Image (cartoon, rainbow, N blue to C red; front, side):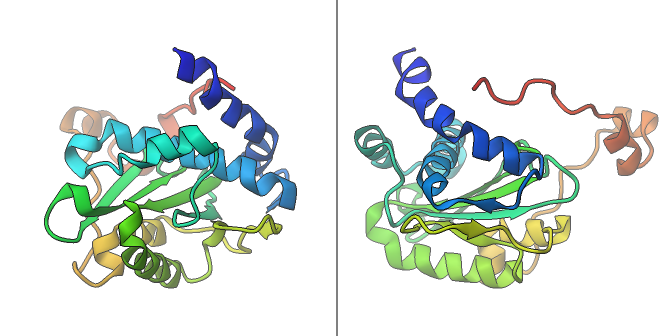
Length: 221
C-alpha cells in the first residue's frame, strides 16, 4: 500500500503528461527534461510486469531495491521507444528471456508493452554483471527493428524523437523475442490461437479486433 500510493505513484505522476501526449500522438518527441521521468515510469511498469511473470521468466531481483533507492533506471538498462498504427499493440505485454547458463537467475529479460495507446516500448534488463550480453541483445533488437525503435534510456537528458515509421505487428513479433533476433531460433513464437468458441462468433481476427473495445481505464494516474 505504501508503495502503490507513495513513491511508485509519484514516478507515474511525474511522467503523466508526456505519456498521454505520446499515447494519443499529440506529439512525437520526448523533450530533454521529460526523458528521466518517462524512463523511470516505463522502467517501473516493466519491473512490475516482470514480477508478475517471475515464475516463468525469472526476475532481476536487485533492480527493485535500486529503483526504490534512486527513483531512476540504472544506466545498464535499455528502454526503446516506437509507435504503432493499431493502438494498444501488445497491451498485455510480451515477455522474453535469454538465459546465459540455463538458469533464470542469469537471464536477460525483455518486456515489450503497448498499453499506452500508440506508444510501443521495449525494456531490456538483467542483473548488473550481464551488461555485455544486454548490449549485444539491444544491438540485435535495434537492427531487427529497422529504424522503428529509438533509444530513450540510457540518455543524458537529450531530446528523443520517435521514429518516422510505425512498427508493424510482424516487426514487433520479431524484435520482442530475444532468441529470434540473436539467431538462436528461426521464427517468432506463434501467436496464441483464438479459442474455438470465440472463433465461431468472430470467424476472423479482424472481426474480433473490431468487436473488442478499448478499456476505459488504463492507468490510475
